[in-house]
Image (cartoon, rainbow, N blue to C red; front, side):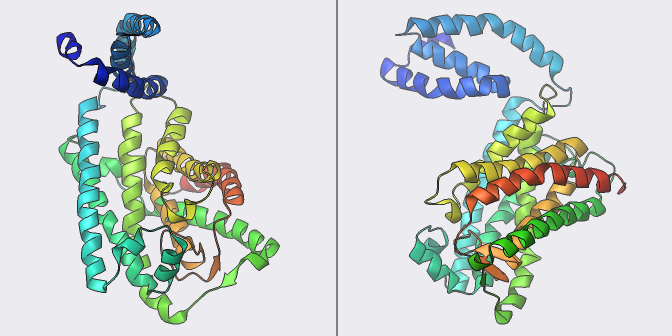
Length: 365
């Protein structure tokens, strides 16, 4: 390996070293199995020119044997090897993007929709989307999550050689009652806080309900929307979080990291465009943290699946923003997401949701 690395020219090695070093350093305390090799590789490249990099490489290399011993002693015996997680993740993401886009284009062609509009964040394009039937636009977007749903299940079975049921729950039987508890808990909290905001900021809301569009949208809301939310839970709280949970990390670190990863793809949503990223990151990250926490606590996706569906269903049917990523037929709408209050609500909701689901969920088995 050393001879192979030495053949890489400096023009490639040095930029690669500067690129890999911050990634490896960040992952070092969070995911050392990946952070240590990346840091060693980066400092080996940079060590060709910088003495500090050679010293850092020596220090990490000297600690490597101790770290490796800790990895082996702390890792759960049933935790799959790193390369299986990497291959599985590549399979999931590639399948999702390729087949998801194919299904989206196919359905867009069937409904005679302009795909460019669906992926645009421009105000005029969002206005054009709102002029289209909400149910067909929503179906075209949501169908792309079907490959994510299936690919995650396949990866768990093929790459990790594990029973698919264990991806959903560690118990002998999946509890639909706990899924309803997750749904009811988040719905109760959201409606309570939403009602308060409606009273305090009535002028910000617009009555947007259209009965003719509501019934066909319900079909999409109760078929494709659960697939979308469950697919995200399988990938983020099922696949990714189980990767992180290797027996060495604490619940806090796993939940924080899982929430951060969950927030990243959501930053591409149209409602985030043109806003400072701080509050959207807090909002999505807090929600991801909350769902990760109860998933780790119960070793089950039951609560998270129900809560995620409740969140998206309420946004589709009760209150949505006009720049939302998902076309809806909500009863009320606001011009844009108030990210400051949304972030505050997401943080406040964490302890309430954790307490409610712990209190009600314990009686569900």
